[in-house]
Image (cartoon, rainbow, N blue to C red):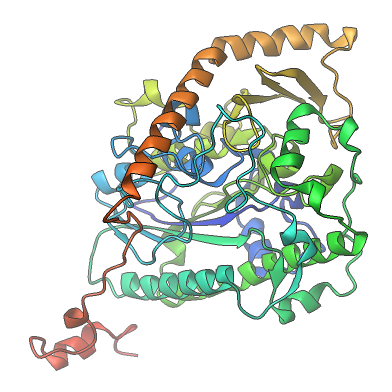
Amino acid sequence: MTDKRLSQPNILIIMVDQLNGTLFGHGPKSFLHAPHLKNLAENSVCFPTCYTGSPLCAPARASFMSGQLPSRTRVYDNAAEFASSIPTYAHHLRRHGYHTILAGKMHYVGPDQLHGFETRTTTDIYPADFGWTPDYRKPGERIDWWYHNLGSVTGAGVAEISNQMEYDDEVAHSAVQTLYQLGRREDDRRWCLTVSFTHPHDPYVARRRYWDLYADCDCLMPRVPALDFADQDPHSQRLYLANDYENFAISDDDIMRSRRAYVANISYLDDKIGELMTALAAMRMDDNTIILFCSDHGDMLGERGLWFKMSFFEGSARVPLMMRIPGQSPRTVSVPVSTIDVMPTLAALVGIDLDEIQSWTDGKNLLPFIDNAASATPVFMEYAAEGSMAPLVGIRDGDFKFIHCLVDPPQLFDLVSDPDEMQNLSGVPAYGDKMVHFTTLMNTRWDLERFDADVRESQARRHIVYAALRQGYYYPWDYQPLQLASERYMRNHMDLNILEEIKRFPRGE
């Protein structure tokens, strides 16, 4: 389907990191201080039931970019190479005349740090090599130097600067400068700018002015308190051990401070998004620009005692997704969708035919769902990284969610009657037909033994390569943004009169 809502739109994609989708419905929940996001929601198509392709940064982002699940991209974890031969939305748009730019995080692993983007304005915040590779051959192994731990929770509070803030301040500044540059139209091509922040990802620390916004907030404690270890499902138990829960005593005050800092950082992000919106409007490009807002995955935020991501529970797997499309009236699309649907949807919006790769694309075009011309279809998820012993798969279909792994008993939840996923229905006779349905979907979609073997092969190979490359001279893959000083501001090969004229916007006012 080629969409006729607009002609030759620009595209601004805003991605954040680890934003819990249960905090969004038709936009941010009312208690959140997020005026810019709320305004965006009021003018957007909102998808309140959107899921990540995989609840971990690198696999989620590769899936988002390509419209393919990790079993197809082979980006199983945060140290798995994203192959250069896999087309992303940046490739598709660039092939069709778009200037494609990335500001911020995308957690690409491997020597290709562009994946279709013509330029990047910043380096990444996380490493590009194979150092964070899990190992299924060592079940229960905990690697302290890079695994999450609950120090993020016990250390939550106020900070005026942090590693994450330093990064996102730079991302926002570079993105605003890019919008100014694009608005001056020194390059007449349509453009797609992806701005990818690392907040509200842990550690849970926030600047005082955002922290203070939530001084009287009464929405800071989890709905479901921590469960005893024995009452957790096997995968959650593994996450407990992987994240070193045993060595931390988490108090209610720790939980409240962590969640307060987390929502404060949503407000921090909202200010950054406001800067982007202001620049877009100032350069008179807002009327012809698609704006898409989403997250890579969520954060459990202490629900049932779990933190961070790495599971298919709603807090971890559900994410916000909003699209402001010029010419499209705002609405809410309630059917379950996925972040892997973004790539084919963008293609449809600008008239790009994906027939050449449709057979190898997992995502679907969402425009028929916006137009009420399509029925709900199952949403698939995968996870094969730290805290697992074999790949996990998840399916959301209708009101139900199904989760399975070769080493664990299946889980089935009715998300309407049990939104907190407290009652596993997989062994309840009345739900036998549902189990048959989901088991059939699973077996049609996946060969789990083959999936497991592929992950183990990938891990084993990467452990060897990483160890080898760290011996002797080491050439890092981390992206180095280039700035040609001789082409900036005024230099003697330029005409000052022309320079001053073309760098001014608007002109003649």
